[in-house]
Image (cartoon, rainbow, N blue to C red):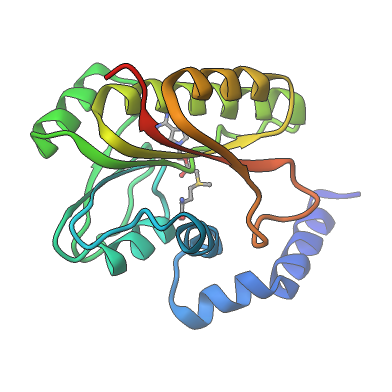
Length: 205
Ligand SMILES: C[S@@+](CC[C@H](N)C(=O)[O-])C[C@H]1O[C@@H](n2cnc3c(N)ncnc32)[C@H](O)[C@@H]1O
């Protein structure tokens, strides 16, 4: 198949996707917004005064959802790509793994954080095994960061892909958190191996 035909098929598929259509109607920047809405309905972790860190926030669907629920707290979003301003959301452009970004996060909250979200995904290479491994590494990095900044009952929610590295993620989550649940939202495409891991309550704090 030619490159043009592939991108045409991708566009047709996208236009048929009900969550893509709904995101346009509701004014969400991404269809991912519905994943967070659904997971928050299930686990109820977005509170009006939450302190929340959104890793891999671009284009901003999750930050938009968080900003509707968190009216008296603080939201800091981080991405290597520039994210257009969202009301009540502060943004830092950068790689979350850099030391100076970590320092900025600590300075911004100046307190323990209630929720760390990570919807980060590595750039796709076409090799699905490699891509899911690299996204898994981002999840492990985000979990490590979360264990350093979360409050005792804090929540870490992250994207991952089922595959070899997922066992490592699950084991690490069970060592660090009291409650660990795997969850696949209905808005996550069936054909994708994408999965979310919901972790709550830091152990050994
Ligand atoms: C699936 S998108 C996130 C979608 C977003 N949650 C939303 O609702 O609009 C994944 C994002 O992770 C970001 N990302 C990947 N690696 C990163 C890193 N090391 N630091 C910060 N962001 C990263 C990418 O730039 C990309 O924008």
